Amino acid sequence: MTTYAIEAEGLQKSFGETKALAGVDLFAKPGTVHAVLGPNGAGKTTSVRILATLIRADAGSARIGGYDVVKQAERVRATIGLTGQYASVDEDLTGLENMELIGRLLDLSKRDARARAAELLEWFDLTEAAKRPAKTYSGGMRRRLDLAASLVGRPSVIFLDEPTTGLDPAKREDMWGVVRQLVGEGSTVLLTTQYLEEADALADEVTVIDRGRVIAHDTPLGLKRVVGGQTLTVQPADPARLADAAALLQQVSGSKAESPRQGVVAVPVKDDSALTETVARLHAAGIGVHELSLHLPSLDEVFFTLVGRRAGDDKPAGGGAHADPDDGEGSGNGDGDRNASASAPLTV
Image 1 (spheres, rainbow, N blue to C red):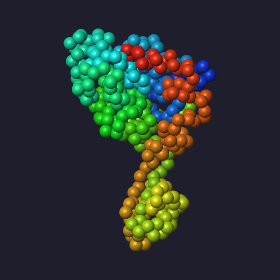
Image 2: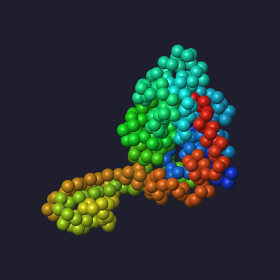
Image 3: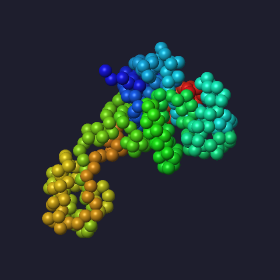
Image 4: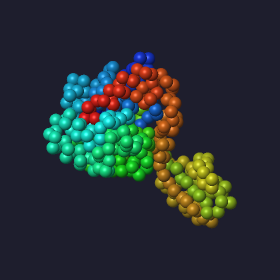
């Protein structure tokens, strides 16, 4: 029997007339990264907030580390760390004071709280700014402080709701390193993200949510294979031979060649044997190449195929009736819950 660090079945949640979740299932194994993808308003944040005990589902059940999120909420809160989309630290306090305060709220001694704060501030490259008020921090620094705060209690399950939004590419890579280290030490991470390359780089499994429902679940590689085949791409060394290369690829694949960018042709193929045949035919035809590649679709292409638009598009599929208030697209009914997230000592 499989043991899960995170297990949720049939989660449903409405905010007034807005149906945020319509029966979501989520399962994450211990010591893994589980990414939740979906358009804005799909229900990602609402799912996280139910799992983190910030709000209750209207129907369905969920357990974190074996503890029921409703009946054993205090046990769940002692198990998890949460970095939400909104700041959870006191901006008038310094970074160090925020960290020490959270440690004390978690029943650490004053000495242990200070030691843990210093450790995490160094880990997140915030030591030099530790004695400055958090309100003087840049957006990226605040995100790092939020994540550091969620780790004070050494949680075994960590919820990261778009943790790298607003970070520059270098800091995003640093954050990826932190996530990998946390998982390497045995933590389980549930990650929502608008950066599909982030899910591709970090996730062991991916769940795609749209309009409050799960529409796909697999490993990143599995999703790419399910969505359809591979793409064979050729860039002739001589642009004048582009039409010849296109005709050749069509013969190999039996599909019409497309031009994804200037000077390049591509066709879908079923298996790796097409690459060998293409190399032989190009050689026989005397067509030199600058580029010849065979690749699976990216997660962005998978997402577009499943959802019908690119990640990060603002308009929710199917209209606002399915919008997730916590993704910034619902009615004002989500405001109270949003404020609860910002102040909850759950960032535990």
